[in-house]
Image (cartoon, rainbow, N blue to C red):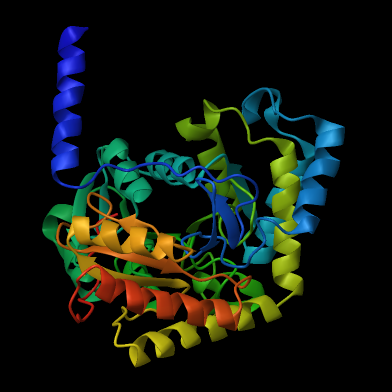
Length: 405
């Protein structure tokens, strides 16, 4: 036992030496754009609640009403007694929204990506993956046992070269990418990847977690925006805890594909199902997204406003048209100082440091929500410019996309 304590102390000391210790802030109350965090009121600019639905009264009512009928927990895995009518209805809503034959709900996005990947490929197969894929996709590839081939971020031709390699021609080939990358906010070349996968007889799996609700017809995501059906993107995953405002995740595709994942995905088979009230809230979130396009329009306007105001203030931001607007700082300690300076001014923006992003690319990951106002965005930019000078940072230019998870 003492050796374990020593090991942990040494490891924590190393984390502290690199300014990489993460500390949880306590939010008291709702997780909307106005939060009370560690006892202090702040405007929240680091949530993935892109459409402001996490505290929408209609989702709250849907969850509370369902809870009065179903109780709080599912009690078992989906394949035992955990599959509720609310889950079945959510899967039907997802399939209709995304234009797929079936959808399958998981408890988390991590479980969806890890379980789906390992259900479809194994040690006889190959995964060709973007260098900046989310950690859940990276771990899914590792756990599957398939041979891994990493291509340069966003480089479709590099993916094609990997697929054409003689060593990758045996077994099944799965191309895996995020649609919108979580730390840089840029978008994968989805149509080109779909063309390449089809030409090379490979399967394409896209995680549209950060595009869902924000882009595409009815907010159905970047894949839908690109006009890619299940014949081009046969494996589509996404989450319900970002734009949808609830929790959980899904995989969608043709019926036989989804049935295979249902029967073989260990992260689904051996997990208790999400609570039915959460599924009810997600269903309401999807309905609002489809019925209220003005939310997406307002969000797009806020993204354009932030970028224009930042440029006027001399703050460079990355090439991103998504609600994710990273402000690259570089040094871990400097990113922490900048985040703390913003909080002192009433703005909550987390510092993102390694291993989430590559060393030397620590940043503030600014995220915008349809629940923000023009004045709130303007105030953030002004506070960011003031804080940048206050903590002793010099003028900078944002480098190319360089995150690692």
